[in-house]
Image (cartoon, rainbow, N blue to C red; front, side, top):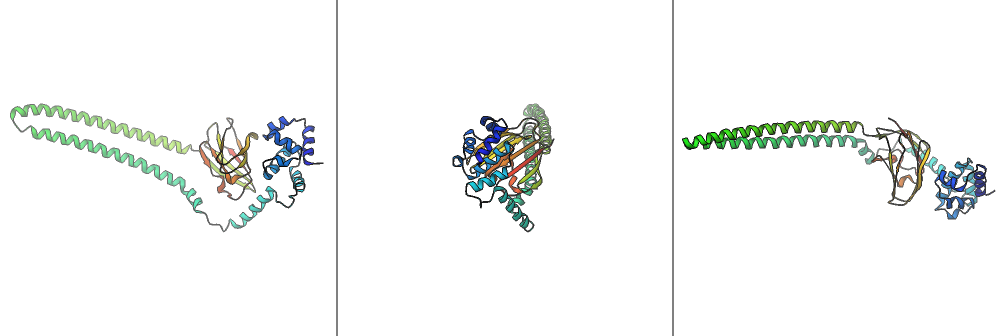
Length: 313
């Protein structure tokens, strides 16, 4: 029995229509029909033939590995390694060499990046306080200079002295008022700076963090902390790439993005687990709540990968 007929019979046995299957797998109905008719040439490419057959088989509870082997024989590509074999081979090679591999300049920079950012923020705050203090000192110097000029002019004549005395008293009162205003401004600026520093500290402490917890062949597990109640995912591609995203085991979106394209997915409130299935991870970018997720730092060689993120409060 052909692959297409096997899948079609399994779908019928489960009482599923093509529309039901399209909803469950997010594979377009025309591709599902092409698979059931063994018309694999109608699919986007060899990789998508294998990916869609695997996804179809799992949706109707069939052994996907057995069908992929049958597909390889049927299409005359029985000597071509499956995506899983490629991943296993690359993983073994990486494990043999990673103990002798020196960290790259990019990895070193990424390690010290948080420290660099904190230093820059502290320098900016100290510089702002310095300039505010310097400007206030200049204002005080100008006021003192004006008071001295008034005092010198009071010695011209007795009549002028009396008028000058009155003027001096007015100037002194004005200077005192200006100093009082300046002092209040200093206090206000210091208060604002303290509040700003406190807010910055609070914002930094609540910043979301993604930590790698486990690597198992082509499956990478992470832990997400400090995230928003409602998580927003932005997927992008530097080249043509197929990808899918699920929340708590329920698929939210799947599709193929062309080079330069992007797609945004807002996950349900209270999502505890996020899963990404990537067909071309080297050309895929993921941004979570506006923060870029650098998932390639654990393994930059794996192309087909599964990413599982456990969301913690």
